[in-house]
Length: 83
Image 1: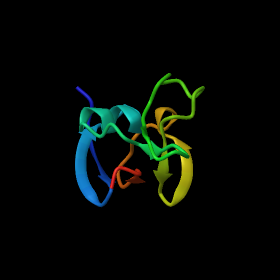
Image 2 (image 1 turned 60 degrees about the vertical axis):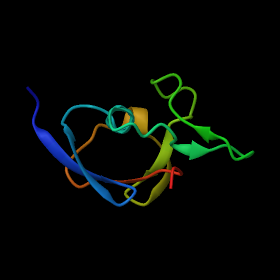
Image 3 (image 1 turned 30 degrees about the vertical axis):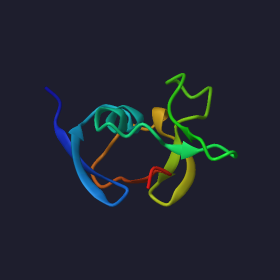
């Protein structure tokens, strides 16, 4: 069993399994909208391997990070457009 890590998503602390991606952690927490399209629609992961760019969110203050490519670690701060 993997260790648990603490991350913050939209200002809310979450405990998630270590070794998974941010996208997986968000989906497990039922966060489905990661960003808004130019027309205002909520978007979320589609391909899960970094090709589609739909899983982008702000990670530790850096915008447009592909969350399906970043493994969670203690202290990550993630901000989605699902506010």
